[in-house]
Image (cartoon, rainbow, N blue to C red; front, side, top):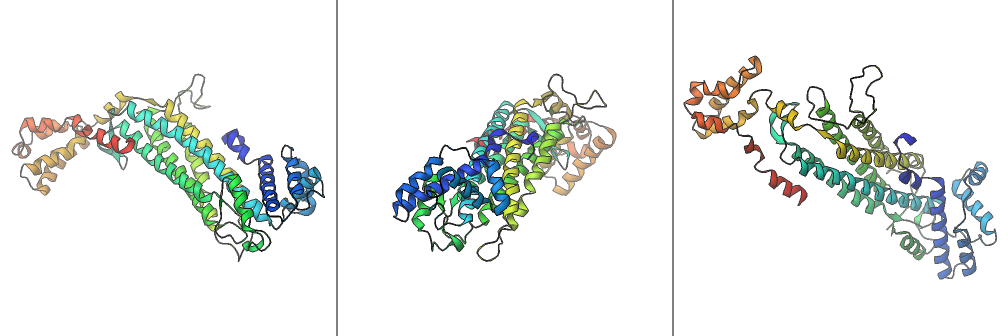
Length: 433
């Protein structure tokens, strides 16, 4: 992923230096287990750890790989150069490349998940703070983009918090599912390596032994992981799209913070565009683009092929780096979002009480009017508001069929905004506990 959309902590997980360090730890812990079982000399296992503090020469490994055309062999050759070829002759004993590659990949994914969970915690904290800040800030709810009934800005933030909390729970589960390791040797039969070696390495590296691997760790685990990232990305876009709509000039109920010296357009000096949330929409598309390839990686030939490898070399770093950046960007947007309660109220009143139509409809039916007739009466007066800018309450009070069923006081009461916020506490209790 390009530096523009990257954070250094996540990028570091996917660096060649980190990858080779993890490969080394897998090999070194495996040697310890082999020595404990009496398979290799203890002195050879101890000698491997001499490279613990070594700085692996990425350029040298690339140079070797240019000849061998095999990345793991290139690394093992370089490791032997560091600790001595005689001392290194038992390294990788009974193992196959996938034992190193797959176990390493899962370690990187779990570390990436940990950073993503921290980022989600920041988003959740921001959403919760703004939800309580605007718990009773009235705004108009919209369905199909059209005024519906009153809601609150706090409920808007609360629903995004609930959605993101579900995403966090899914990521916790996806992390657990992908946190497995395999050192089962060629075709996964443990023919040349004791299962206790796998158990030891996984314990030392914080993984669970894969119950059964076919030389590779089953890719349904990874499909679930990347699908979860895709869902989280969609939740980011869901929140970002709402903010973009609120910032539209005709709405202007909220807008991204516009910093001193910031410019909105190279041509139009008046512009203040929702560039950050538009960017989040694009980043979400990138994250979701990894989901289908990850699903297709589940199907491999027999015990192993490497059709998944090139895909994962791309989507592993790109998807986690992009999502990490997007989560922190969203958190920043929410934390600094400028909110305009007075514009919310003005928008709500733009059609002069029209949004209270359901309350009047229900009151008429409670007063004995059939639902069909009640709907006809309310819609007849509502259309006058749409078509000529009339005041809805005034029209209802002037309609003899309506006033035959409802007194002026009863009609007046149906325009109380507090009616629509009476269960906000209940919803907040459900969301925030």
